[in-house]
Image 1 (cartoon, rainbow, N blue to C red):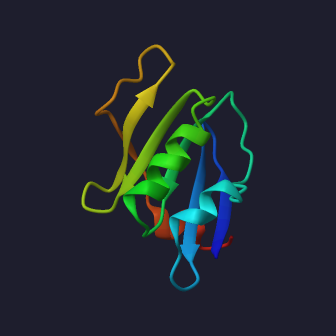
Image 2: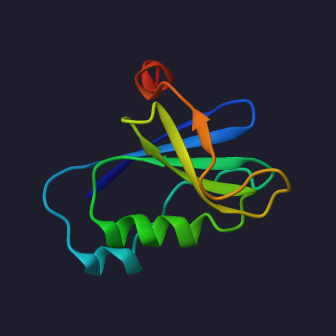
Amino acid sequence: MIEFKVKELGGFTVVHFELNGEIRSSILGKLNPPEVKGTKGVVLSGRGPIWLYGFLVHFYHYTRWVATYDPRLGGAVIIASHWPGVQPGDVVELNLEEVLEDV
């Protein structure tokens, strides 16, 4: 299955996931990602299939913005935003290892 770790920071919440073995798309109907505050953005991170990311982006649509972590950029790329001044393509600096250290 999927194990989620959540870390709330100042302006956003990090939702990190880890897969425990092989997963199938049929889990999406039963998947219950953790709730986060809609008054903040959300950063998604983890190694998983694109269909899982698509599901999570849709699930967190109610937040100010949604970003996906990219270690090559040293941060998270905004992919959807409902908040003025935050645009798709913007990068939020983030050291994920440091953030998840105590979770």
